[in-house]
Amino acid sequence: MNKKSELLSIGEMAKYTGVGIQALRYYERKNILKPAYIDPDTGYRYYALEQATSIDIITTCVELDIPLKELVTLFNTEDSALLHEFFERNKRVAEKKLIAINTMLILADKAINRMNHNKPYEIGKIYTREIPEKIYYTKPCGQSLENTNRTKLLIDFAEETKADLAKYFSAENINESMVLVEYGFLSKHSQTQTQYFTFAEIPKILENEKTITIQAKTYYFRKDKCSNIENAVDIFSRYIGKRDDYLIIEVEEMISGKARINEPVYELRLALL
Image (cartoon, rainbow, N blue to C red; front, side):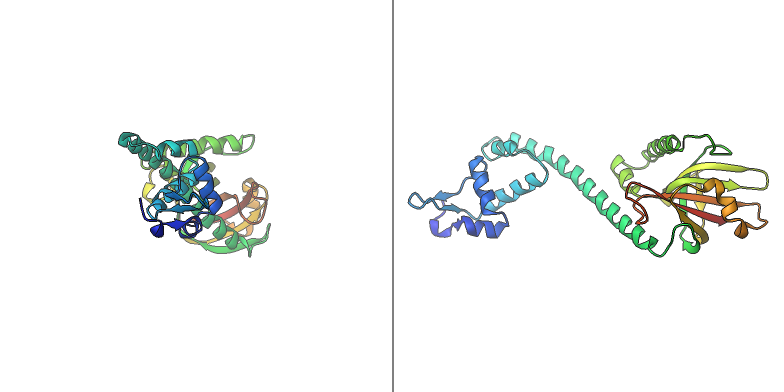
């Protein structure tokens, strides 16, 4: 055992590790971490410096929501196989939590950028801006959206998109890459017909026969609180003029800063071909 003079008081250990005194007392009561020495006269608790590693393990497990009863076994066994199994199992728990944390970081960055980006624009007014190249994974859905269940179309399309992307990415990477991406409907207009598609933005590396490349250029656009893709020709008529070939893109934006968090804002874009 360490000499008492080499031990840390419970207050010193709390300060050194950043774990509160009450937490250290709680771990002792739960038979997880006992002090290296308890003064029989005063009842003061003292800890060895090397116990800081055990405290790091405990606090990490608490962050991962690992039950404290598992730690009782962990700190009271000499079975190396049991220790190995514990760390292997909870390594996987940590990896899943890390994916969730990374996804939240991506979500937070995109949400903040989207809200900042939307600040200058009023609902219902037409503006222009430069939009970078985008690759849209698409699926045809007919020559009209009238009398169609758009929600079901988007849900079914999202499942199909994830299934196709799974050929190239792990499920975790798909979830990260699809956070707050652009998705919605687009209509492709020509002299002879109008065709509608569902779409979702994907990485350029996955460009294939099911994708449409939206060129980087200046677009006319406006924001609305309801879908207007079927009225887009009238909305943009003065800019379309006598052109026969163009795209209408309607992006459904969640977390736009222009509506409640669970209500989309629809950005309608005109892409002249």
